[in-house]
Length: 359
Image (cartoon, rainbow, N blue to C red; front, top):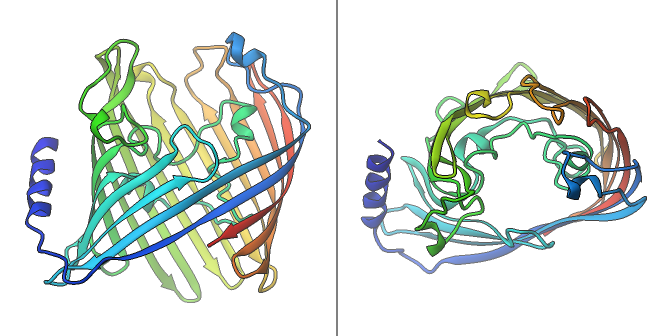
């Protein structure tokens, strides 16, 4: 089935008419730097020698930055075609991040390349109040303390090469489906995607991602809701160990200066040798003034497959906000605390002040 869909999409793309006018190009991105004061002794210990040796620095600058290149044009019959390439501005293992091409029109939108799945992109999550997404942990703080799982669909298909179709929005409803043959190259690949590594390889194959999102307004309340899921076969050492599946339910309610929202995320991985997770991430944002937004978020995760000393439950609390200093510049400030339970549990707190530049 996946092969038939991929061949049909490839045939459709090959029949696209020529671009009617030159592409327009743009460059944008962001740079987020935070100075953290840390109250913790040692990092998350999974029992390995390398993990046990890690300790926190009392003061640390953490960075998250990307430069985003875009191109866009119109075909003779009115279709929009374009591409996007994201370059990591801070050192990462995937220096070239998402990169993909797309075609859109009255039929919806078709994406091909290394990008998050349609399920991930249609997810409704907690509102942003600190200039960065509280559920993402891009600064590596909480994930260095405990076994931290994100309540989002980037575990199986990640940024691997995939085909994604987004339907047009009808009466506030939009759907998406993604097909990912393999996530061995989680950050996307060019010619490296042809051959598979068998010995010691851990990956997912035949991954299907589905999502539905609704956006509407009832009275004075703006409502967003989503139901998303992703499933695929877990492959280890060239053998199929079973199917893994995750499902998320998201909702967001906005009225006046308040936005309340979050996600309930469930994974079913035990049958393939993994862990089952139940995660709830909720946030409340309050627009204090035209320049300042304040808020808090709570993250609760439970590991329901307790067959190892490394398993643990984790609670994270974040309070803070951001203040606009000028066009594209925000001051950010947060206090983040982590509490975990289990044989290898650790607790810690992080107080951060930073600058976020968007361009």
